[in-house]
Image (cartoon, rainbow, N blue to C red; front, side):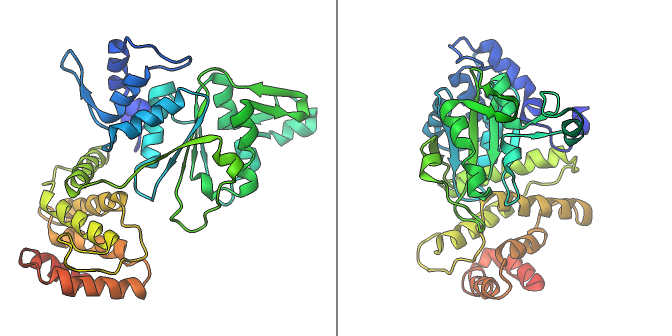
Length: 360
């Protein structure tokens, strides 16, 4: 059944690796954990086990950051993964939950419309009207279920939730208790319960966390890839994984095109060319690693279904223009200036220049 799913949960997709780590894991495990903190870190960063088995890396970044995040989960503090869009916050939180408690599905998605009931609990109103408040009429939230089972609850885009809904977490995080006044009872968290939240402060529609709530979290800031080579490696790996999941026929990976896309995104993000000689204007979009992955994946689909299977400049040009030009007025001017002053002057990029001119 999992094979037919478009995107299996981490604990399903990497079940074999989690089982291997469990077999080789002889280190102490915190109460309620499936693996030790060392094994959780190994699962995220990848390694070769003593028997020669390979654990694939899920995250490419500083080891110390991952160790700090995992250590936080072993305490009574919640974890806040903070960073600009595209720094793998959701990806890391999912894999942390899968490795710690074997279940990454206890998820609350933060939006402007997220209600207090989504965080605490709701009611089956048919039963509520027929029977009055009862345990059977109560509909537990993912957070309540995590408390009852001693598992990891995930909250995505915490700062997109209204401030009054955010603050419903304060009692849960500080007292590890969720009162149910309608029933005159409460749910007390079992050992192993913790919360991983993600947030960024770059998108529109952000609601700042109150100081009382922020104090309940240990914050780990996930950075953008430090070097171009690191970012190219991340993009190439994820594109391959996505292509396998989507069952795209084999196509030449096009490392040259991946490096070109990464170079463009990094230069426009930083506001200067790679050699530091030319200052550039930055567009309104984030131009994150995640967007680079999307551009290359779309280009690979074009090359496979409408080309000869080789990823070329024409296959990625349209995706890059769409990623850069978010504001049709100001961003288009910035992109045209970059094309004429940077891309046009690079002899080895002439094919890309022509392809971009055709779609701009």
